[in-house]
Length: 397
Ligand SMILES: *Cc1c(COP(=O)(O)O)cnc(C)c1O
Figure 1 (cartoon, rainbow, N blue to C red):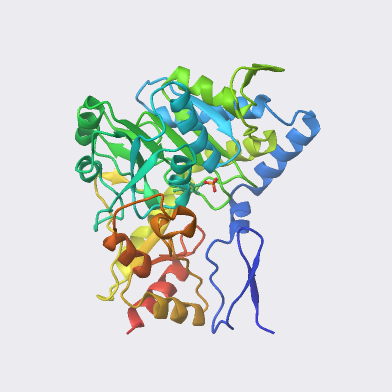
Figure 2: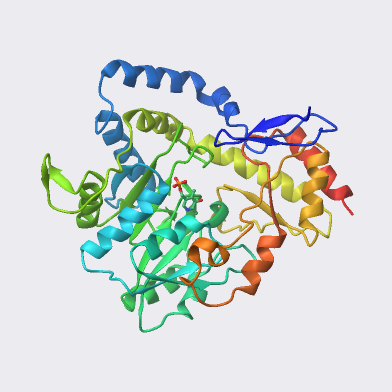
């Protein structure tokens, strides 16, 4: 019998017999070493409270996440806790449409190599996604590159801080704003990342950079729920209110519906789990940064392209993504030596059957990346495991 490993979503996949102890890609159970007792205590508190939706945990989480995003800026941010990251994105787009700031047929620029969830809420509401190739140095669409693709119909940019690397350019953002173009942040992968900004003391956090941001707390995100959860963060009180209304059947007052809404609420128990984890975000980020620095130091094989460590921004390393011309063979080789890896992402949105006829343009660099990228375990690996992985990579020919 071949050994099996459990994936994040609970499914089971077959793997080959590992030659040495297995290094899993995301053994989430290891998080319990860090704050297992606190999570159990918080879960019991919610269970015993008899209050499971729209209660104190959700309200406090919203305050705490808004404060985290505002950082030292003194800005007032509004946060709405919702059911998952995709719903956060959908509610954000719907709210701007309700406010007349977006309409069907408007073009929205997006990074061609993002996860499909960044694009789905655009096509769902009749917006036209216009892909932009990412930068070779860091996998992100830069705002200055996006600017080159602005047409008379462009109304917004969907900025994605892919792999936990903030994709911010304050000067380009100001120029886009001048032209009346909205900036949405898909901050599913970069909670707690900072982007330095001139003229400001310190820096600003992702999720507070553009007009409105969507967060995901999918279990394997840097801060993950024990199930699905997400959030919308914005400085615009009107938009926040509309998001909250839409997420609760389109109703502000029970049984009176002013908008055609959804049920996209976050559970109290997820809010309680997330409040525990948010208290540890500093440790979570620091551990990922140390691991990334160690990979960067130890991987010396010239055939392997390492991700760039930017000295001027804080990357939170949702993924540590290397590139190889021989990616599939490299992945098999690592698996044979007991190291699990992932591909983010094997098929870009514009090539997905579900997007057929909904996107235009060709994206050769994005397509090349989808054949070369490989995500190494990060977040739950020891120094010893990192050196073992780096040693394997350095011996790969
Ligand atoms: C995870 C993710 C989402 C979707 O979040 P869910 O909570 O899984 O719905 C959206 N965009 C990006 C970039 C993501 O990584």
